[in-house]
Image (cartoon, rainbow, N blue to C red):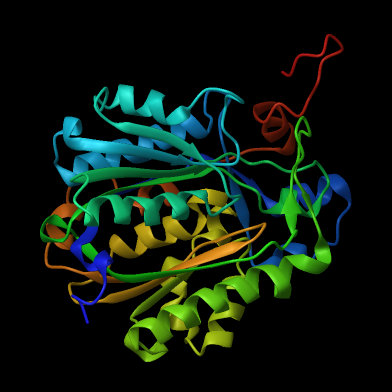
Length: 359
């Protein structure tokens, strides 16, 4: 089956993840707003990552991309596309992709674009990169997913919205730590989550968030992938789904007949929260940090609005050599400093002075 689809010509040459050192316990947020005390247990999230005052989606994306490049061991000038997927870019009009490309020595002979599709923008970039590389238009492409914690203070979203970044260098199968067997996309107009222009925080339609959006689209994408390839749930050693909380990925796995033991190794949300565009793909990075040659990984990111992609990825013999280069994701997850709600609010610019400036 490996030669049936164009994706099989491409793979992940390098990968990297980054999570800020600061964490806030969900119990701290619950106490601040007088929320239901059992919410952290219901969501299966203990704490979430918080960016520092000098961090944003761009700087975190650079850190993840730097690690991916260290693992790939390719000349930056040979990377002919840089895609930056986010819903919290620091500039309303100015690409972040060009900043990272310049900082890594990739410019000027390259494509560079910022993409948007809620939490699915980085996955969109991944599929586009697979197409560009498999067609022969370019040899390498860099995909970055990065987001900061965005949520209206006191809203249930504040409990999980967190900060983090992930990056992948897509290139020839022969140089890859894991190659793509096939992919599948499933998209509809389902208004479960949105943010209008000039609105500081996103809104969400409670009735649409679960079954009509998250579950319907991931199940649709995964079933489509399996019908396309003939693969079954038992063919996968690991499964990684979008992680808006620690409960949804386990529930969608159950719907698909996938044991939770295959999901838990890539479930990072309980420790760092929902990193939006880095969510499912950080789970993939964590799996690549531990997977063995021959393992098959199912990956299904999701983005509100709504859409999901599904990928079948097979780990190669190069994975062990490549992961010796670059920092493992577990380093960023384990190394943390817990902060109070006031520090979190200051870092996120939630406190406004009377002159209108954020602290």
